[in-house]
Each structure stands twice: as C-alpha cells, then as structure tokens.
Image (cartoon, rainbow, N blue to C red; front, side, top):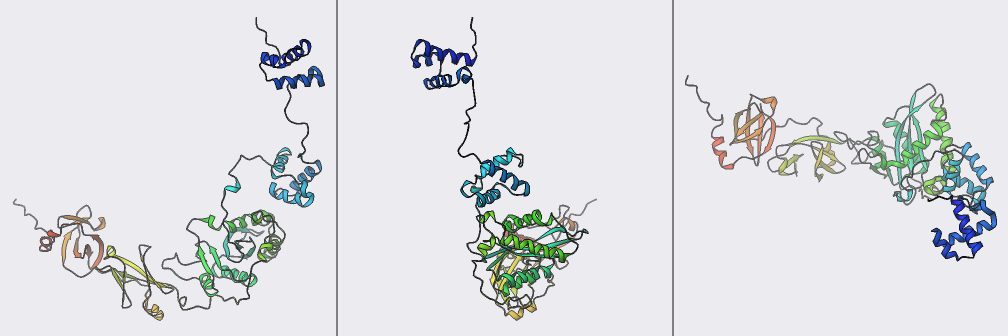
Length: 479
C-alpha cells in the first residue's frame, strides 16, 4: 500500500537520512529524485530555521537594492494625483529634476502607479522605437497649418482656430481664433504668424478650399496660395484623405483640447484669445515636449536663422498670379491635337473626338480629360493672351466627313459595317449619324457629338456601309 507523504515530510526524511546515517548526498538526492544542490539547500534551511524552514516559500528576495525609495514613491503619487494627465515619461522627467540619479525608471513608475490604482493597466502595444518619425532637420524649414473646430464659447457659439506648428521644433507659430474659417481670416492668421516669427521655406496643409484651389474645377489661385508665392514659400499639399501627413499639428489640436479648451470657456472670442495666447506662451517656453527629448520647443526654435524680410500680402500679384486660373473646352482632332490661341498642342490619338479641358497656369498649359491630367505643355502664347480664355466651353461639334444614318435599336446601339457601336439607351428608336474620323467612329444627333468609339469593324466593309447612307432597305410585307 502506497502512502503519499507531504512535501515537508519528504524533505525532512531526506535531511534526517543524511544527518543520522551519514549517507552520501548524491545517493540520497538520487533516491528522492532531486538535484544534489537542492538537497544542500534543504539541509541549510533546516539548520537555520528548523522544520518550518522546509515549507515551500516564494523565490522573491526579501529586499532589492533597486527598489523605489518610499520618499520618491510618495512624491510620485502626489505628482500623479495633482496632474492626472501626466504619464510615466513625464513623471520621470519631473522626478529626475528633483532626485537626480535616484529617479526610478519608467517601468518602475508604471508599476507603482498600478499598485496605487492611479493608472489602468493596458495590454502591451507596439514599441515606440519601431515607429519611424519624420521631421525636418532645422527650424523654419517647414510649417504645418490647419483649422480646428468644435470650440464653443460659454453661450454655445462655435468658433474655430487657425493653428500652425514648426515641424522641427514643435514651436506653435499660430493659434488664431476666428468666428468662421473663411479665406480672409485664415490668411490673416498666416500673415500674423509670418510677421511674428519670419518666413518659412515651406508650408504643409491639407486640400481645404481656404488653402488651395488646385483641386477645384476649374482650378483657381486662392489668396493663401498668392501669399505663399509672393513670399517665396513652397506650398505643399497632403494626399487626399491622409490626415496623418500633418500629424504634428493634429497632435497639437489634441493637446489644446485636453489642456485648454476642455477646462474652461469664455464669454467672448477676445477673452478666449487672450487666455489662449497665455497658454501658447507656456506651451512654447515652459512645457517639455517628449518628441524632442523632453525640452521646451523654444530651445530648438531659437536656433533658427530668421532673416529680416518684408512680408508681402496676397493683394500683390506676379505675372503668373495676375488672374485666376481659367480653362476652356476643346475637341481633340483626328491627329490627337488641340488648338489653343493659334497654337496646337499634342494630346494623343487615343483621345480623338473627345472633349478636354485646357487651363493655363504658371506658364504651363494643362490638359484634363474627365478630371484626369493627360498632358502638360509649356505655354506658347503671351501671358496677356490668357484674358482670351473663355469660361464658357464651346459646344462639342463632330468632325466633318462622310456621314451615314442609322437607327438606334432597343439595346441602345447602332450597326455599322457589321459591328455594333453604343449610342445610349436614351436614344433608342431615334435616327443618328455615324461618321468615320481617322481610327474612330463618331455618333452624332442633330449636329452634336454623342459618343466617340475606337473603330472595331472590318475596314474592307466601310465602302459598302458608306454606299448605303440610310442602311439596308427594309423588307416589304407581301401580305
């Protein structure tokens, strides 16, 4: 009959066998299925503490030389309760300033905050070192600018803020409150920032209409663009639906909300602006920024070279910005060219018969087809001839040539030379004209161009199709 002995009793029997009989430790350890070093520890613990010392206990040491001092832990808890938004990294910076080399690590601070239930444990995320941080090498090389809304006065009126931040130093260069974020207030904020801090090399914004008119139809030059051109600033745009490109100014918006807008509200926009200016001053000169090594942004920004330049507003226009960008419509001929003010520009035979939009801007001629840029040429006409561009596109006319008449069937197509060409369901049962223009087939109705197709029929059958302009004669019913 087998009897299971408690763990303490088994260890006691092993120890007594070595002490009473003088048996070899190696043999006794083999008999009890343990390592000889384990048996040595049992003997030592029994000699120092008796039978109770053989009980199973935690391997945690009684003391640690790196354990956080009670004074530092008490100071840590006090700082966290006074500033609930400070995380382990900010708290470590504050403790380093007070306790120097004795300051604990970020991991130790995190564990202490968890013990005191001052922070909720979060699952392990991707390490910060694996992210690639993109920034310019010097201050005043690039500014990021944007508009943030959902800011309310005490009586519920919504206002907006035109913000700007230096890409390298994280120095806030603009925090200008406006009732509405239209073109003129946004440009007033830009001019104020330029006069205060100087002219940067580049400005990065999103594609909002207050910032650019390049994506409008037709494209125009807005006031913000003219200010950038007049002061030699390169205006860069983000890709559509890519807010992470201007991530630094978006992060500034979050900080503003958490530390200013969510904590207080004022009766007027003037009172809010005064309080916001004071907060921005502290943000730039007193608040350490983690992404630049826990120093204030003013430390980096003061190293920038800012030459005294006269800031030029957007009312002064240069040769290329003398007038808003205009466009006109042209039909591509059979050789793939368009005629603009007595000059011809190549577009491509694939677009023969198609209507394209031609615009002149900054010495270039841009050709768009259905909103897609298909060709760009250097402008050949004089700048003053841009006034001859008309905003009213001409009606697309079919190219002259032999025409035959065909009736649109119930499927919305016509037959020419044994091949069907689409005319559209809206024209079913109507008689349309079919013309051969180069390698294309044009379908017209009442002198206006409906569709242009690549010729797919057999060229040898064109003569027979053209010889019967009204199509095959219909059979007469004998009955």
